[in-house]
Length: 387
Image (cartoon, rainbow, N blue to C red; front, top):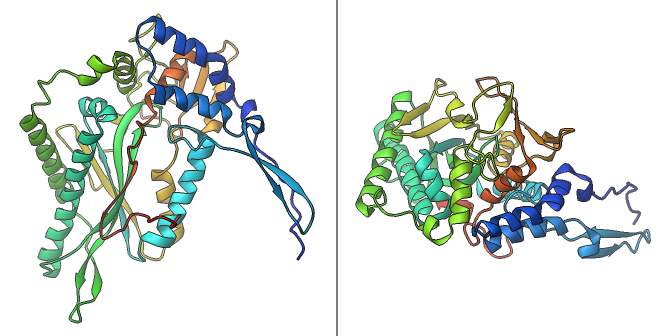
């Protein structure tokens, strides 16, 4: 058997702006945090150090040999981290989307539901995984309840089952800390037919009033849960246990500079004068609603046969925080991160001092053992050996 002839071009992470900035600035950042008696958590520090080893053969590699053509290739180990490594995040994005399309999501319509949350909750959820899971459960139950209500009223189905996959994103387009949910939900319900077999029933498009009702219900349920638990009046546990991480989270959530002499000031921007990209969502578009600081978007739907577009949607929801091609360096040493789409105030790029850029990345690292992809209803999570 003849091997296909092609030229293998290994990536060279050490030549990228991202790698060079982290390699040059990391030790200074860690030392300054230590001097302020706000040491960087070990899981965050390890994220950076593992990235500096990722794709570099001197830190470990596989030697691959082809018996047919006799060629050898060196494949450097990757860090496999979940924060912002563009290579590992991109590979995980592609694998996850392909797995869901091929093995999980049935050939039925799928609708995206995106829930954004108030600033106070974004900060708390960034470190409180239990609160994040509880709010996600409220989101899922509210959406499933809305689907079942519409199934009863429009189709007369009394017992219906729903399914969805949710991606927990910690970032926005400007590398801000904005924990929110992207849910890919089956756009309909399953119910048993006369023979007891599951049968899919597509639902009509949700009306704007129904989306607003769902957003208001989510806001009411989350607010009620917080009041019952007394979280509004509870001291911030992160500030007490890890003041360094708390200060980073608080600054990055608000789009402020986190470290150095300009701490607390707004980031510099090109083409505009506002840093809060979240308020620039197109709330005037159909099937989008806001209630009590909660924004719900559900105007994207994928047809049953359009598997290519479905995979693109899942790749978008599972994408890593950072895109290498949008990061560049100015002659004065500052960094420029180009937005994928201009914000409505005209902002096209964000400008960072190197140390504050490191702080931004530090805030985006998820805590260990917190699942960022969740399965709900009739859609099963992967089993050992599935992927």
